[in-house]
Image (cartoon, rainbow, N blue to C red; front, top):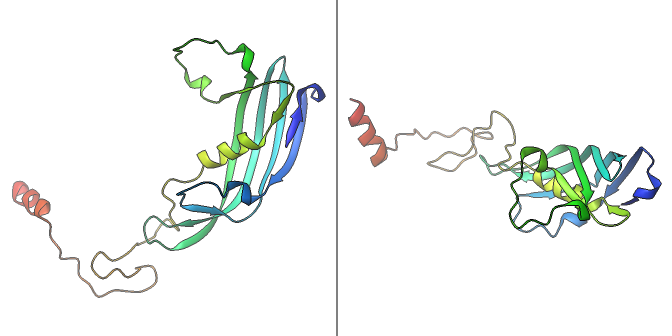
Length: 171
């Protein structure tokens, strides 16, 4: 979705969606987007500064980081970024950025393509280690059964050399 800055007086509401196929080029990710990425964003213009605020929603499929089962989950991203003209960015070889500068992006010309910003915000807000449920019990370290689905008869009596040294140190 492309917005023209000349068409924005003060605020402009943008609604739309991106197809999940636009996210398929992401390699080695532990998720797959299974619904279109829907967004409702408000663009505000203050002189040359443009702010984009709103919500991006989607449904994604993940692999649980504890039990390795596939599950789907909705992902809501609150988007709040600022855009400034590229010409106004100082061309200094080394520039220290503050916290307020971390969500500032650049645009060039009179048009802003929203898709790259939405794409980046979605990727940045995906869980690093997704978990299927808060009380996921994971896999048995001995037999490998999923403890969420079946009870295993294994007793966790395995001891490690480090554990034995720590035990003797504490005694």
